[in-house]
Image 1 (cartoon, helix red, strand yellow):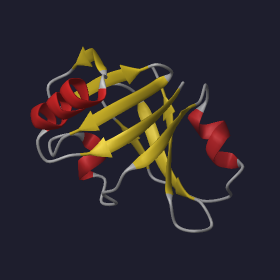
Image 2 (cartoon, rainbow, N blue to C red):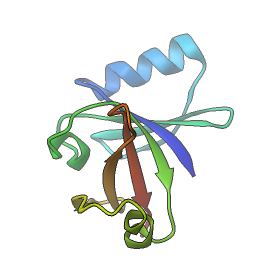
Image 3 (cartoon, rainbow, N blue to C red):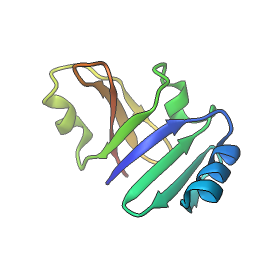
Length: 107
């Protein structure tokens, strides 16, 4: 699974924009998170009440699905904060330019 997570202030307004103007289709609506699809692209729209928004580093990022989050983090040699959310466990790492990459493990 690969996705992009956009942090938005109004999940419903953002979803309407992507659906009505850019041809995305709603796949799941979890209230504060709406997952949209367009072809092979999965877009996660996360609102202010989500664990992703509370994590301190607010920002858009690529989301890479991993089978074992702890093993995936071990290659970075860092103590990334692991967050347990309703949909799974995740942690943020940064590329050399400071761009965020979210490693996400589904339950």
